[in-house]
Length: 285
Image (cartoon, rainbow, N blue to C red):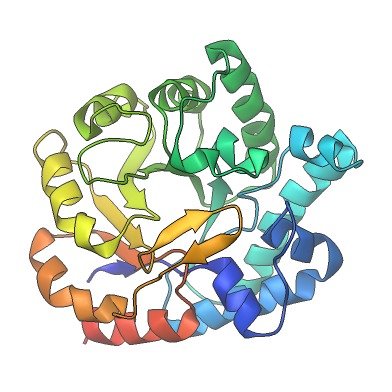
């Protein structure tokens, strides 16, 4: 049975009436109305998702300070993101994956789709270490570094996650099916992280559906680790949001993807709990 991952948290929040405008995205909803985050998570559990990703993608001390909040506020929000997800999965077998977004996500300028931040390696290590240490304290089931666009950032994550005491998933993003946005090849990226002791799954997320087969085949040529895919709905992203998103549901892609032996599959930007329920019915019919 293929494990189902949830879909876009902001997409589901907007479907149920929340607003994710502003630099904190879903983090703002977490601060203001955490019950809506819990409701969105629970919708995904009901839809069949066995992995629920927390609302911590955009949360960091640096990002909070830019908005006039404190480092302590950021740490409390990171912990709360796991607590809210844990409440949503209570009484089920669904796992909580703590989202570790890329450094570019706090810049609010699309840098997570470019990489090449111009930040030193040591600064990247510090940035990720302080968040990951807090998330580990909150006891998620999985540490999920996602939408990683940059090779130096992958190296920094490998250093920080080398001593992780729970399963690690690392998910890259790609604009062409062969490279990270920074220009490094998929193969280079996977070799950078392959020695993390607790690395359980590698993946690709927020990629266009038509790139999935190429990405998976390139990954399978250099690793035997299980592969997770959670694609977006296509289109182009800018600071003003997504434009020209596709209309083909993820479940309609399954005929092409089912031969890829994916361990886990779900959705990213543009997908909601209705799509995940539909995907679950097709995948695990």
